[in-house]
Length: 172
Image 1 (cartoon, rainbow, N blue to C red):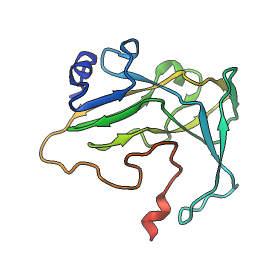
Image 2 (tube, helix red, strand yellow):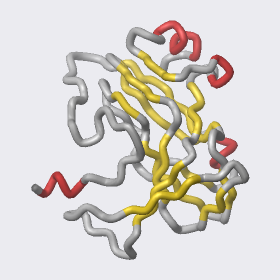
Image 3 (spheres, rainbow, N blue to C red):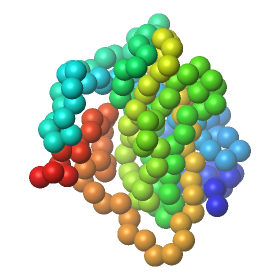
Image 4 (cartoon, rainbow, N blue to C red):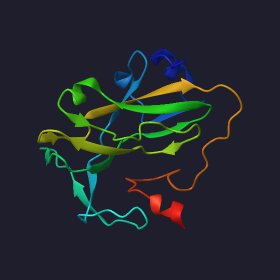
């Protein structure tokens, strides 16, 4: 099952934490999350799975920033989320998708017990100007059946900012 917007609100402070929370961002069965004002891009032409890949930071000014097609940008949401006993999921808003902007390439699935800022894998089809604090995506929550082990990996848990891939740690 997916939690309704009312149930998300009812569970705030128990097994759902969204900080800060704004009632205006609550939907019938999800909650809109805002884009932070920083992006990362990889600073090399060829990425290597077995190595840390260098990144550079880009600040999104209030007047907007032009994203180039066929380039991956890593961003993050403004809200810190914690989830216990539920599976958090992230999806782009339909209004964002209708502009040809994807907010995750494959990583919209969260683990039960995840705490932190979601990193977005932003990709566009057409050139598009984005702005800080735009409601860019939505989080929703699935119930989980059966016994489970909560997410405790140190790789991305409790992050404070945008997280570039740390897949190279799997090779160590």
